[in-house]
Image 1 (cartoon, rainbow, N blue to C red):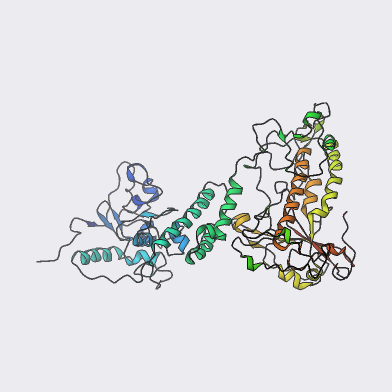
Image 2: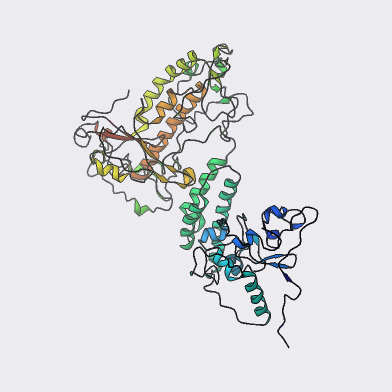
Length: 601
């Protein structure tokens, strides 16, 4: 008695043509696409299942190493060389664990381990397509012939023209119990604890993936998954992973709709003083003109945090004085030195400021400036049709003069407030003195030793993501690359940091330029000046909580040169340049020549 042939009821080639449309029906594989199944289970008709003629299979099956079966007809492979293969994104499980992944859903790795296969289904098929476990399928996707764990790939492999006959013979052999080549390798075993932890990490990844797919944020999902996988392999709980923490912080900052103070449903928004001392309420009439009872209100009638008219300017890769969340007390040892220095000495450590177990949370985890929604570059756009200036006067009315400019702050959800040239200049003059007065608070100087290092200083900043403001002397060799990727600022969608080949007026960094070289309404200027004071004050409290004193932002071991009144060797008197870090935007500024202290301009 002859062996059973499971293909007795099938024919080879000549799939019929639809008499109504003139096209053939989609093949079995093309109707099994996950993300494009249409009416009656078909995925868009023959235009998604391209065949040369009724005697051959489709292009998709040959490209993916499948036997093309169409309504009971086993088709010879498409005769022309297939186009370049598109590799689908990995599923969440394989992305997180850096496992091999292919087009089936669930994929082989998830199917073998009993794991739910979630994530992208782009270009994927439902598991169970005929020949989806045959050698050609795996070779076509860059694996060895026996499966995803087989390393013996054949680059450039093309499906042979008799593949349909090989497939029939394989099915006959399987029906008759003929042994098949064993699969190479296997899914790495996972304990229950590892499986539970993998689910936690996958949830973090899925939140980011959802935000990216919804176009709420930009991000490099693959690169972040690779970093998460390192913590997962090391069995670090997700709530103790710095990578997971950065992802969640990034998402929280980018998806908050409205702040407490910037609410678009209110006519006017109160200026938030946030506990700042020394604000003279009487000067608000000068800073923000209006009726006496309203001089603490900012007439910002359409302001939200997100969505914005443009993305915020990212900070550096890490803010000043940042430490990993899981750093221990012993990693920052503090040795009392009251037996060496008096309390007024720059090196004296004040134990009353130090906080441990836990450390004080960093006040600006992502290093984003309070001015991140104000553009730095570009020309101020002019209105095609002038509008009435909306600046209030002391009687409560508006200026009403023709204005060709609006407030450029991107926090306006829609058009910013029209401001005439006269009131814009008046606003700048009113606030200039206030900013100049807080410059010393904003600056934390480097120590003399760090700024005397010259070239080694630049090399120490290489690929650290710092923003550096410095006019390099003519003829200077190409400076080192400062940029790097960052999860917490841009979700690794682009690099941050770099050289800004200039120093800007007043602050040296971009803060002064943004406040006084862009058109900004007075309520915004007032709020940002208050916010900058708060940010700098909190940064100083944070630094003291770590080290018991203010220290150099680079070495974190020695006081800054300003603590020595810029005098003597410790005060950097002999240094050609002097450096400081802005405690608002966290940029590094280097300026000053010939040993002269850096002056506020």
